[in-house]
Image (cartoon, rainbow, N blue to C red; front, side):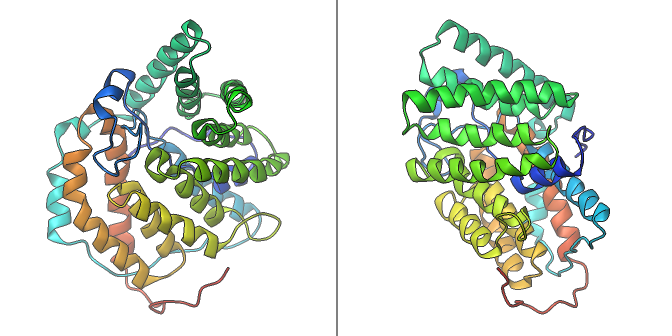
Amino acid sequence: MATPNYRGGDTGAELVMLSLRLCSSRRDKAQNSKKRSMSPINGARDVSARSTSNYAVVRRISRSFARFMAAAGRDVPRSVHGHALTTVMLSTLAGLSAAADISPRECETRARQEYSRAGAAHTNHVKDVKAAWEFARACFDVGEFATNSNERAEIAERGISLCRDLIARDPNLAQGHYYLGMNLGQLARTRGLSALKLVGEMEKEFKRARELDEKLDNAGPDRNLGLLYKDAPRVASIGSRSKAQRHLQRAAEVAPDFPENRLNLIEAYLHWSDRNGAKRELKALEELWPKAVTALSGPEWACSWMDWKKRLQQVKKKVEEPSKAIESPRQKD
């Protein structure tokens, strides 16, 4: 999967984006929402397909972190473990529908179209809560394809303003807190080291969203918290392996059949050199994959499948490498 070139700011902004590594599942277009009031994956309310996966965020953050670590003169951790994907997994991957074949350019087009649609809907129904948070969500999505920091900041600030207004009107609206945290992440990409100050606010918003609705966005609050704790530095920030593992595992428990959650756990265990953990989650992913292919079908999921297929290939390559690491290293917080 090719991803748009990184156009972020200095290493400070890159570090903050690393600490985000936001992975939200996108929802269906408005016309599909009524048909999917219950998710086929986890039964969560108002959970639908990803119109524009933020796969670009996930992949770009890893590259950004590598550049930041190199600039700081530190080694980038490597993941080398062994465990081959089974024939079932490979055949399932090969059997994905043609609808999953989509280019990053098409994903960008969909994101911009949804941004325009959601913006118009909000303008026409200013007091409509759902129209407002859908526009805030679209702000985050289209921010992935901004061509410069000024454009990204402008869009992010629009999403932030929408969410703050929603929270002022209803402090118990999970979507308001959730998409506020995500748009704060986009804004952080346009800042320097001062953007580190936003990390605490993002953590707070995701925690609040989790308290209000942990099923939101296929366990999005736990997923984002887990990735935030995993990738943030332990020194001078909120990084914590124990917290990351707890939230990533919880996301997989809340939405066990959502591929993103299992992939995050596999990647995390590889990052932590935990071979047994990676093998365990690969097995779980193998078991859920055929069901997910059937349940999450259609063009609205194409961008997500493009991301998931690419990441599975990367994981396969990593886990098949000879490993000198011990099976289950002592956990470090």
